[in-house]
Structures are given as structure tokens and as C-alpha cells.
Image (cartoon, rainbow, N blue to C red; front, side, top):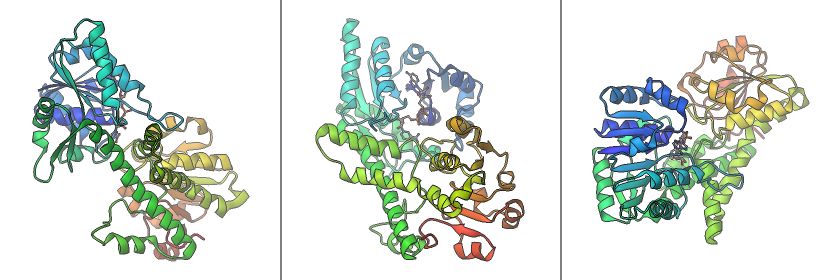
Length: 445
Ligand SMILES: NC(=O)c1ccc[n+]([C@@H]2O[C@H](COP(=O)([O-])OP(=O)(O)OC[C@H]3O[C@@H](n4cnc5c(N)ncnc54)[C@H](O)[C@@H]3O)[C@@H](O)[C@H]2O)c1
């Protein structure tokens, strides 16, 4: 099939590369000329394991193209995906301007029947609005004989595992109110489907709600375990033991039950906030989602509070090393990352920061531009520690898991570790001579 994908970010680029791998002819469109030029020369604007190989391979095979020209990409396309951003507005509602902009352009440009797929995460009812917008443009052009369907196909990929998630998905959700459009979508995803990877066809509105319900459910598990972790810290219990004790219950399971510094990234925080706003629009108070969000906001301050309490006023001009800037390993995405918020808090308290991330230093430098004078970025994990008064760990990259602790001791001025991922064993750290703070292991009262 010929496919157009509008918006070549994390989701658009992964979708484009994987659909090209499935032998489709894929045209990825972006309005960012620089991004498109880079992609045309085989340079990826994001870090995602395995993506570069797929992009280069399918580009060489003549199945994957990058362009700023939406009209050209739509020529003879059977399906057009909308994969632009839906960032949060100040009130927490999703800003759908980019989606609507693309919908209008599609309505202005199509000259044949087509399926329009909302893959961006959008609140329930958006497909209806997109449908009306495209129809309005067709009517204005006097071409209302053209037929199009708007399908919802929410994306569930996890950054860092995105290729695997796309090629071997837990499930593919297709929201389609028209049988022919549903069949086309089934055909498209067939190469990625199987007994363990079902294609679930439901109505459009249910598909739209499914995406928010899934993310809010996962976020709620994280907020729940983080709240229990705070109790463990006060009561002298150990969240790692508690997690094992509850996660082995087959009704509960172990996933998304690790205590930490709060969830971040471009999806959970914004999707939980939008769900609260969706509820308001429909007159339904989303109390659970609100609490999940509140607990997370508080958790994101937990490490900064610990550090502030440890150093007190003496924190001024203390050098704090930070390992891990993205919101999780294997990605360079720093959006809403707990590390960024903690760094801002530390700078406000008067500390200086030496930060290091294996792939996200540049993104963090841009994101934390306001703190440029107090934050330096190290070339490797060890130089960040030179003369540091403490190390704060945010992201469980493999290289941070078993560092050479004797080198840490040699380089650091004070031997203090604040571990936002519970990477190390408290007893071992104490034996090695570190003052070790972590989350919910009874070591912070
Ligand atoms: N990142 C994830 O892990 C993830 C996972 C699932 C769902 N989603 C959802 O997918 C959507 C996209 O997320 P993302 O992280 O890929 O966003 P992103 O910001 O990485 O990429 C969006 C891209 O769209 C481009 N764009 C914006 N307007 C355009 C236009 N009019 N024409 C052409 N290009 C345009 C931007 O230049 C940008 O490159 C969001 O709704 C997000 O919530 C993201």
C-alpha cells in the first residue's frame, strides 16, 4: 500500500520505518525542514534502538521517503496517518491545534478516496471533529463526492522499545465505524499480527478512550507504589520486599510496580491530565486520575526534598552530579523527566549541577536552558563526579547499574548517593562507605 505519515517524531518515524519494513511504500512528512533534510541524509533526529538500521535499510530499498511536501505524499496514498504532537495546554487539556491543522490540509489537498488515521493521542470525540473539518474543506472545494473515513488507531509503543513494540505489539487497536476501512487497516497490520498479537477492531470512540484508559491505568500503578514507598520510608519497611509480596499475586503482577522519582515522559503526565479534562467536558469527575496526578507531582519533588533536607542551607554552591536526564533508559526524550524538575529545584536552592546522560545531554541542555549557568554537562559518567558532594541517579541505564564504586569514592568530595531508581543494595552501599538514600526502603525518615 502507499501510506503517508504526517508528523515524523517518535511515533511517526517508528510507524513509517516499521510499515516500510512490512513492504509498504511510506512517505513521511514533516513541517520541520531541518529534520527532513537530516532524515534524507540518513541522520536520525531521535535516539531509538534499532531505528536507524530500519530507516537506512528501507530508504535504500526505495520504500521509505522523507519530505515536507504533504501534497506529493498524498498522491495515490490509500491511508494517511496523523502522528503530530498533542502537547498539554496550561490547563492540562491536550492542544489539538497540530491535529486540526493537518486535518484541514488533508481536506484541502486530497483528490481521491482515502482513509485518515488518527494515531496521535487525542481525546474522545476528536475523530468526529477531524471528519467534519475534512468534509468542510471538501465542500468548500466543491469536491464532496470524494469519500474518506476517519479511523482511530492509538499507539502503545514505549520509547526505548518502540521497534519491538510495533513489530510485536501486545495488540493493535483499530477504532473504525466503517467495515471497509476496518478491513484495510486489518490488512495493513496483518504482518505484525498473530495469536499473541491480536488486532482488536472496535468503534472509534471506544478506541479513543482506550488509549487514555491504558495510560492512566499504568500511571495509577506507579503512583500507587510510590505512595506505598513513602509509607515504607516513614515506617521502616522495604518497598522492594512489599513489591515482591504483592506482585507475585497473579491478579496483580510485577509490572509498573517499581517505586521511583515519579513518572515522566511525553505521555503519562499529559494523558492523565487530559483524561481529567475530558471528564470535566462530559460532566464526570475523574477522581482516580486526579489523585494519580497529584501523587506524581508530589513524588517528583521527593528527591529534591531529600537532598534539601540532607544539606540544609549548606547546599549553596555544593556540586551535585546527576546521572540520567531522560525519563527512562534507551531514549533521549527529556519531556517531563523527573531529572529536569529536580535539577531546577537544586539550582533554585543554590547548588551547581554536573549532569550526564548517555544520549540525552543535548536535549537536556535545550530543555534546561534557563539554568545554563549552574548546570554543566559531562562527557562521561565518571567525570560528572569529579569533586561532587553527592550523586543523584535518575535513569537505570545499564552502565549506571554496577559502577566502579571505588572510582566513585576517589572522584567524589563527599560519598553521598540519592538513588531515584533503587538501583543499589542499601546494605552494600553502607558497607562501601556511602551515605545512601533511596525510595521506600526505610532509609529516609
Ligand atoms: N512518544 C511516545 O512515546 C508516544 C507513544 C504513544 C503515543 N504518542 C502520541 O503520538 C503523538 C506524537 O507524539 P511524538 O512523541 O511522536 O511527537 P513529536 O513531537 O516527537 O513529533 C511530532 C512531529 O510532528 C511534526 N508536525 C507538527 N505539525 C505538523 C504539520 N502540520 N505537518 C507536518 N508535520 C508536523 C513536528 O514537527 C514533529 O516532528 C502524540 O499525540 C503523542 O501523545 C506518543
